[in-house]
Image 1 (tube, one colour):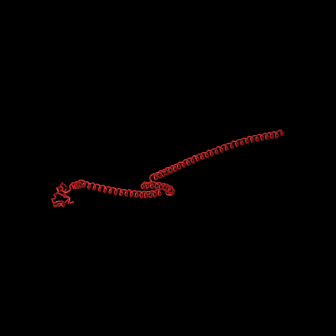
Image 2 (cartoon, rainbow, N blue to C red):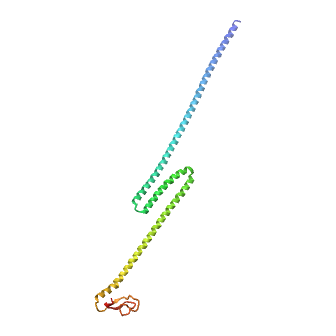
Image 3 (cartoon, one colour):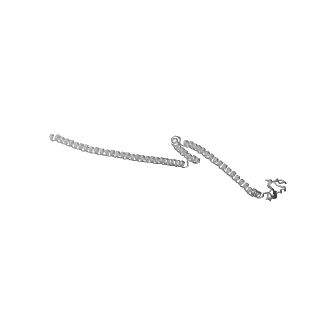
Length: 248
């Protein structure tokens, strides 16, 4: 009995230790599995976070690319507008040059073309000045440039007005000269009419008369009561005068 007691207790203790080892092994295995699952979950979370960051980074890059494309498109539009304006300005200059060649003998046309060229130059200067001043003080630059342009326009308008006044004076002088010439022609015609009406008949009758007195109707050229060409008195109207050849 005594021998069986200690052996049985030892066996039971050994069995219990085996069970403990088994439970410990099972627990360790379970812990290992749990840890493995946790590591896998953490890894999945990390991978998911990395994927999210990658997606966000890709989205940002895409947005940046879109923005760059928009900026490039805007730059192209601005450049196209600039080239278009330059082309228009060049066309105006070419037209002005052609006009100047066609009308080179007309001073007023030359002045007009010169004015167009000056306006084109002023426009280019205004654009350059505006672009420079806009970067610094946009509103102030615009006001100053507008004042300068108005002053230049006023000077050009005054010059054109003076030219128009000079043309008007020249026209009036020419018109006056034409009137004077017309008056002189009318006076000459009147003198010729008097000669044909009065002097020529007198000469004709004088040529026909040789010795005898010649009587004919002529108007009295004097305003006195005594006619210097005959003994008869002159009245206020036509009179009959006896004119001898010796009176000539």
